[in-house]
Length: 478
Image 1: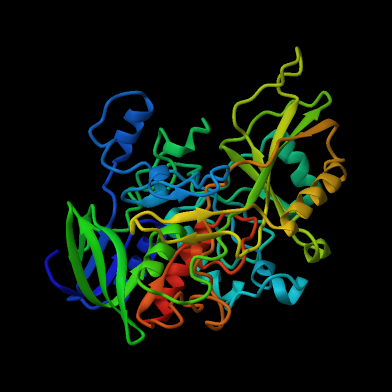
Image 2: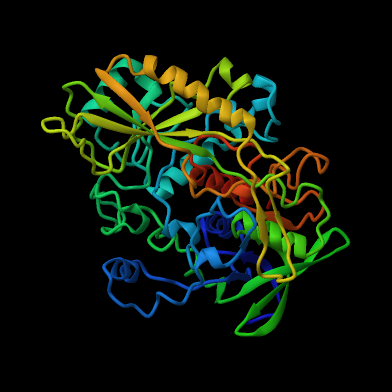
């Protein structure tokens, strides 16, 4: 740490922090002083590939095991994330659908939960910017309004995807994804081997391969191994960030702070700092999902060019959302066979992903160990469970254009690896923690970034939206 005070201190190096910092640097003066505090360390892509191959690498032990960093009081529910430089960009699968306009207006349209304090139209230009920076592969036809084209062509449909697209048009599309369909910006084309957690050919977008130049900027100083545990909050402002590095305590002041860890640790830092907002740490959640295996009569499902070929929106919007959750379908193209002679590929698997609602019974709490928060999650909402029953009732008729023999459903999947809520956006402090620019309602120089900001938890993957929110926040607030 070169200085004791900075213009901006950013905590974390994942999607939220990086896109915020990218926009901030585009507007900041040439003499700006920025400090980035990263709890973990760089674990280069090629070293991750080595580890997956079973080879030894000195990088493997630099970052803590995520499951050891929190106390899980309801262990039947796991929370999946990755520590280290780039955060969860190192383990995500690259799915980047936009939210639907209706997702921002749940109260107005359906009488459920709350409306977001900003709307789809506010984010549209920032969605386009993120899609450009990530080099997203996507179709021309989409169910959500779009004023720009995707940078890369879409991935290919399977034979079943083609039938469903013909039947439903813009409600069944090639999935927008950060898994490149063609080589771009030093990334290779997706190899469709469905081992996206660590892409063997470096096709998916990560912070490491982003070419955004954020952490190479001469105005930016990055300190690794810096575990922030609290902030000094005084007179409605954040004054200092407090962190531990190599067993020593450090304290750094700044004009502006941006919390960019995940929803678990952002809320833990705020709780350790004495934040008394009633919603801080509350409403921890994510989407709920199950697999639908569809057995086909004399129809071979082949083709496709990536892990998730398509998204289906036939169960997403509609009057049912007044009573039961929306569902997004993912066409799963992982290697699989049907264990019957002559019917090896007469099968398609869909991942059925449902929205959930923030509930106070699901929360993050501080513990006597300031570094290790405790998590309680007592399950999804009744609204979501009704959505499961709704999709099971409706899916056979939706798939009537296919020669379906039977549909088998899995139990609910343990985790979608999306950590949402705990610092939700709202119009006032009586309804949530931060405003539409991701600024804390009370501490007006403190941004709280990431998917913890989501007012409600839509079926769509969160990464594109949380990145767009970071651009919007940095653009509108300086």
